[in-house]
Image 1 (cartoon, rainbow, N blue to C red):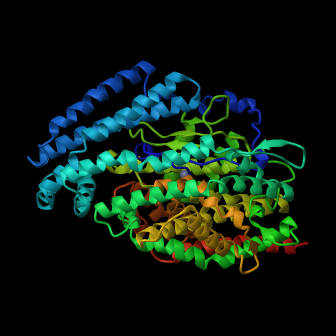
Image 2 (cartoon, helix red, strand yellow):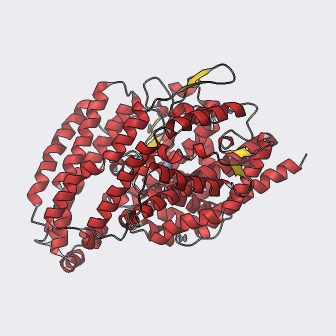
Image 3 (cartoon, rainbow, N blue to C red):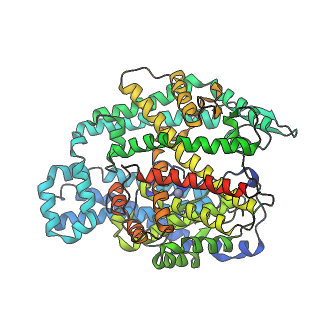
Length: 632
Ligand SMILES: [Zn+2]
């Protein structure tokens, strides 16, 4: 689950970071896996050769230029509107296909310059498409709702393919400005994106990461990947050293990061003000037509669930053998480390994913079989290959491509099931929807993948051979709820708080952000309740979170995992109709707003039910651990 920047809308690409203390060494690939052609993607499904890619690229650049000829024709008739929008769709679809090819090839070996150049060409084409079609929304608004409605009535094809798109433009009328003002906003957009650039420059380039010596004598330069690895160290003194040193470094730049993030928030406030929104949050939620009540539920229900987090942290303290106060640096090491590391090869990962998702029924199973039979995946790690994992699903007429760095541990299996959740979602939506409404929102996307992760956790607990193995999977399940829901909900609460500071006319400094964040850390980890003692020097953690530069975004991780908990519980309990409604939601793609699609599937994210299902799941995991431990 990682944001990929401005091209993400085009790609439907989602990334899961793979960071596990026990499994960061790249193990040699099993001979059979490396040799299997199914684990290397077949690019000829997209283009017969690199030359064919270039030829299509050149044709598409020319076709994009011709889209300007349609300017002023949309209001002529229903068929003129259909002809213009169809021409745009064709260019957009081919641009997406060209981009998927460019991404897959680049990521097979990032060291090859031609791969990077092709990616730049694809990105530039996306920009050309956007600017050559920027006139469409103003022209539709000028035509007006009545005439658009009569066109939709006259042409069933226009209604089927473009009805949702057109009505969505009409909905934005109150927030669309005059041509001159829109021009000013477009010109300002580069400036408004600078906080993210400054943050990245400092965090990834210039921050002087220090070197520490761990208890085993190993010297480690504590950059971000090293921090994420060594904060899981089994030795408590090592973890404390890692936290003290890492956050000590960030603390020295509290004011600079504060100014940078405050500028980001000011930019969002500026956009909201100019476009007649009452707040930056309303502005951010408008695109998905998402009720603000959903955001408020995330914040409120996470707080309501904190007693369960405290229950988990008390278990963690006991498990780690901490006899004084539990600290923030005790959150990451595994509570139930495996005695023998798992070795799950790719055919096993396929078999388990198929068994786990069998509960979704025959249509899902058939889509998964089709995927496994094709050459859609780049599975194994090798030199030069891009890190991480994702599914690239935007080549509508072809099929999804998947990128992994399978390292045979449980995290790798979970990632495998997660990304195939995205791939099957894409297959079902593609089959059921025309191109124009196949692409689904992030809000729905992560539900399809998180449900698979939960079904997998439950399957692994049920099939574990030893008590220790069961405890390991249960512990992983607890951590995924803490990290996937409570941590993201805490971020969402922080983001809302810093926006409200500015919107209420208060000053926003790094020091003030640290104060707000400290209050939230203490609340979420139970400082006053005696559960965890929060060291104030760790409260600069907000400065390290890149997602705060993407607008209101992280909260969708929290809703996805909560929605997945409600679906998973109902599907596992064979609640009548749930499975079919879930599959129908996946097939609906982007044919309606995500909140509405959820509601049709029986889950209202503006009510507490889904969040309560997630807390119930967490308590159930804790109950199972206690029951297993009581067996001695
Ligand atoms: Zn995902």
